[in-house]
Picture 1 (cartoon, rainbow over the protein chains, first blue to last red):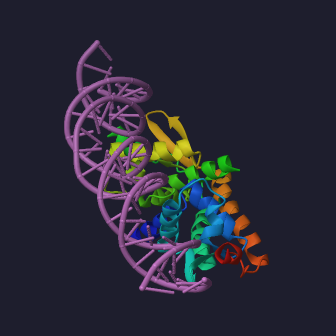
Picture 2 (picture 1 turned 180 degrees about the vertical axis):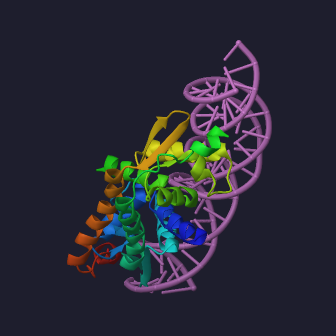
Length: 109
Length: 109
DNA sequence: ATAATATATTGATAATTATCTATATGTATA
DNA sequence: TATACATATAGATAATTATCAATATATTAT
């Protein structure tokens, strides 16, 4: 239970940076090489490399070496893990009402 | 464009902590007061207060004062922003193929 | 083997984060 | 008004993060 939160949190952490969100957006058009991606940013090559490492270590992005180049693509299954977590959240959210007496006992005592 | 990534990234950041994900999960059952939530964690009251501030400032959670208690609930619209980002990503992801010659020109020269 | 190109790693740094203890603020009750 | 309770804020700290310049590694072409 706790562990599940932790694993989703680490994926979310990988997505909690604007540069990496833009990378994900770029990759949603299909596989891309690092050098082409770099042109879309005003960051240095080591910084892009760092972000790609974050994304691949999170499992959200797959990396493969093609000769001299690195090609990256989205791992849709991993992305779906996140989506289904939030959809679960929504499902239960609908049914229940507020417990208006949630704290009364403790306060009275 | 950049700004959009930044605003989504800040929502993602609010969701990139296991404690806060558990809070979201708890709130998915409906509105909860802080004191009841605290029982589900092994953190101190100030730490919970800190996390609730993160969540409310991100817009994901609404807060209202009910006498002596704070009651929190999910703002589903804001949470849906996250899901729809993932769905956008997925939509475009399907259609395109890999550009196998992405870097050839530069390397040849 | 050398040179050129693409990417990764290292080391440094400034900024941010999650956590605690101690204290302050706000609200209801005796 | 004084007390008790719920929550927030302040201040401190250890850990993590995003970034860069410099350098290393890997791959291909000459």
